[in-house]
Length: 166
Image (tube, rainbow, N blue to C red; front, side, top):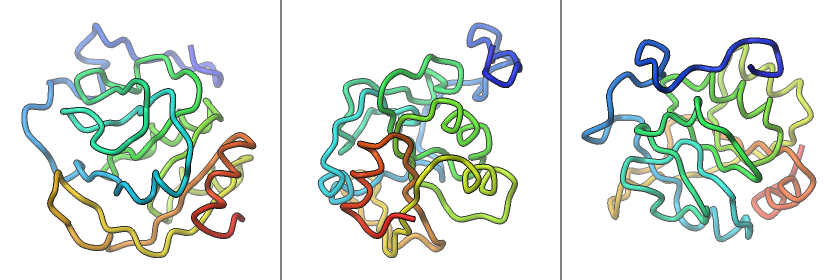
C-alpha cells in the first residue's frame, strides 16, 4: 500500500506491471546521465530506480532496478537516483515524492506531476546544459529544460554543486 492509500503494483501479475515484457533492446527512453553530473554531485546512491537494461554506466549506485525489475513495484530504500523514462514520468515522480530521499533528473513540463513536485518539500536546481549519452555515443544536448530535484538535506547540498538551489 502506498502512503496515499493506493495499492502498489504486483510485479508477479503481468497486467499490473508498468512494463509487461522485459526490455530486449534500447528504446528512446534509454538515455544515460553523463558522468560529469555524478562527479559534481559527489554522493553515492543506495539505489538507481530506473536504470538502463545493462546496468548503470556512470551512476554511483550500490544497486539498481532496470525495466526487467520494474522499479515502481520494488521497495525503494535509502538515497535513490532517478532519471526515469521521460515518455511517462508521472508514476515515477509520485513515487519519488512519496519516498522523499534522493535526487532526480527531470524535464520541466506543464503537467500536474510537475506542479506536485514544485509544491512538495523538494529543492531544485535548473540544469542549463545536459548532453545525454548512450554508451560511448554523445547524443547531443537535451531539447528541453531539465532540473535536478532533491529531497533530504544531504541531497539538497549535493545539487548545490551543480547550480543555485531554489
